Image (cartoon, rainbow, N blue to C red; front, side):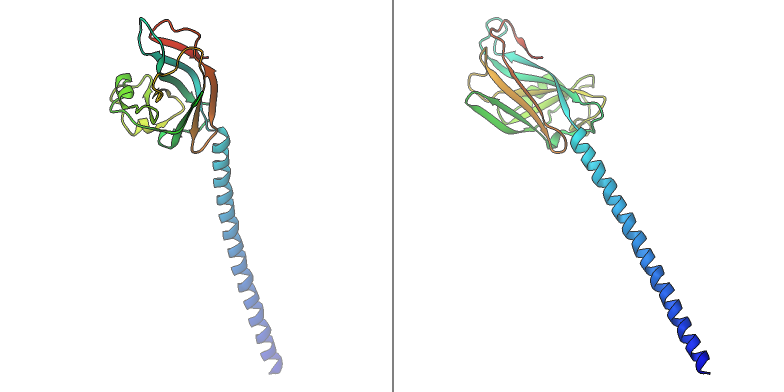
Length: 204
């Protein structure tokens, strides 16, 4: 009788150990799955941080007078995503401008009423905001689509200088594009030594 009771006790302990091991294995699997998910998410975010970039292709200046120009009042910056880059949210992308005795940061995106140069220029607050035209897209290109730049899109960023006299000839300055997630793009350049018309090539 004592042996029977002892055997039942051992069996109960054995079953309890199996249950504990099963619960522990389940918890371990859940933990591993959670860690794997976090690792994948972290890897994805890290990849976006090092690969996402809005690359400046060219910079053109618009002068104050086509026949007798003396300074540049608007900057037209052509940009597109770098190869392998994720989409860039313009609402979370800031522009920076630095020249002699002038430094402006935190220039934010102000979406224009339509996808046209005229509307973009009108929406640009001097020294405070920039607007963008999506090249090759219709004038009624939707606000949702104009909130971010995708891999197949090229944009023209329009920025009106906040300085009273704009940029005179032979002026060094730096333009930077800083996305919330991704690599900043910084271009140091200078205006031409003389202006000859309404538009002046600055970079490259």
